[in-house]
Image 1: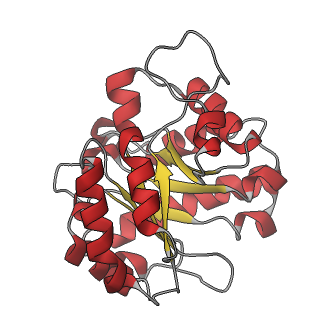
Image 2: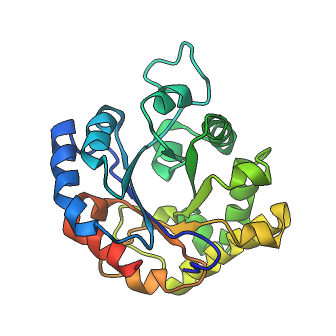
Image 3: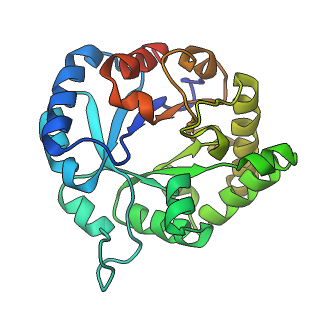
Length: 255
């Protein structure tokens, strides 16, 4: 982490977990556990049907609630989708875009990720933009090329002013839900490579202000070692975000 230049962000991605009642109970459990721990931003991104309950439970605390995806059109014949305008109307501030599960299971591409990113930014939201390589790409030694391409395509036509509202989450796909984790050195190297690409696109001064999270089975046991790296500015947490004690331990590591 480099708190002198950028904000540390610990965000939980609940995925398809928690009913509204379960989310309320979880937020009420974890609120006192993270109260006053203000050296990082704390966010939980929730399923659409759970957002309202989670926001009400988190009101007045240092916990912010986000969404897990957003459509790029304002309205229209897109059954099952939710627009940035809709999310903004209920007070959502953050949204995850481009998660590997969306790319793998629902056919999202860098083109649609870029469209969603620009729609969210145009509506005043903050984007947690996910990118990362699959196992075959890591083994082929082309991780840097893959994340560079994704960074450039996903941020196409996003200017430096809009970039202030973008958090990048480096998520090696081979480490999501597998129990595998990039070593701290691998995470640092790739987050650093992403920052180099940002420097080429926006200039070094701008690149130094962008928060780059690591998200690939970060948990209470490995968070401190990962967060000690200078280019790892937080975490996008999956399974550990569903257990209050484990998530709190990650927040503690970020302090």
